[in-house]
Image (cartoon, rainbow, N blue to C red; front, side):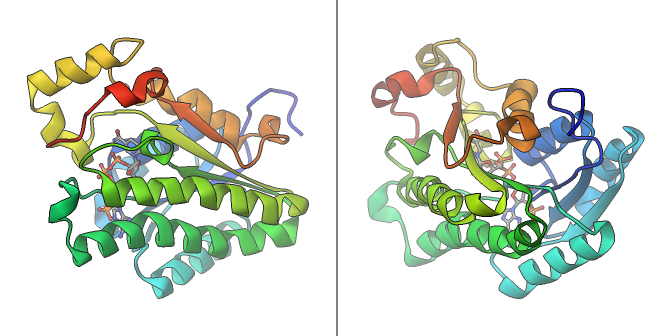
Amino acid sequence: MSEKFFDLSGQVALVTGTSRGLGQYLARALARAGADLILTSRKRDTLSEFEQEIRAMGRKVLSLELDVRDHASIQSMAQQAEAAFGQIHILVNNAGCNVRKPALDVTWEDWNLVLDTNLRGSFFVAQAVARGMIARGYGRIINIGSVTSVFGFAGLAPYGASRGGIRQLTMSLADDWGRHGVTVNCLAPGWFRTEQNKVLYEDPEWVAYITDRIPVKRPGQPHDLDGAVVFLASEESRYVTGQTLLVDGGISTGATRATVARK
Ligand SMILES: NC(=O)c1ccc[n+]([C@@H]2O[C@H](COP(=O)([O-])OP(=O)(O)OC[C@H]3O[C@@H](n4cnc5c(N)ncnc54)[C@H](OP(=O)(O)O)[C@@H]3O)[C@@H](O)[C@H]2O)c1
């Protein structure tokens, strides 16, 4: 155990979906705390700039191709990661997508895309990585959820179902793997401006609306998840498992007032 709190030096963290957005914020925070990094994207070349940034921080880094909708891709990625680093201590299941539509317009394909990516993908990545963690008796798994893991919002039926599933999956895996030294928690961000919800943030009316409903009076900023992800990834969270930590500026305190997903 390190003498310093929240020190991830010598640990290896795999963060899925690091070509942009929250995946980069989370990976950057883990690297700042000392972790070496495995980055993933469906297109490996989209990771090269970010890979250089992490390397410049003095960390080892490996970029791998991963499509979480493809079981063979998941298995191959996990094997390459273990072969390169020997051990993965931390997994952040971040890769995800959304289809924002009124429930009556959701197609069979929309449903499959969102559920296969967010829920099935997260499970099989966790399974592939947990084998090594369990064999070595140590692991930290952080599944990215959302405010929709806990509350319902119009326009987000498949997404909310996938994120609610992530919360439940987190509890099941925590119960299954706790005895092997592997903790599993869900980090649930509020509203952060990224590619995924760009369309919402381009509308000043929506931004004013959502800002008013967030108790701290601003949407999430890139560093707002740093403390939570480093805590859940660290030795210091050893007695925390199966939990969902909302990092949302408090919007979940009044979530039923916020009809945010009509676009
Ligand atoms: N932004 C928010 O306010 C917010 C709030 C709560 C939760 N979240 C969740 O946080 C995660 C990141 O969100 P974001 O806003 O940063 O989204 P984003 O900008 O759209 O980034 C999504 C990431 O997921 C990867 N990805 C998508 N489909 C994939 C697949 N089939 N296989 C492998 N990787 C895939 C993408 O990689 P490639 O396209 O390069 O493969 C990309 O790196 C998502 O799970 C999202 O649902 C976001």
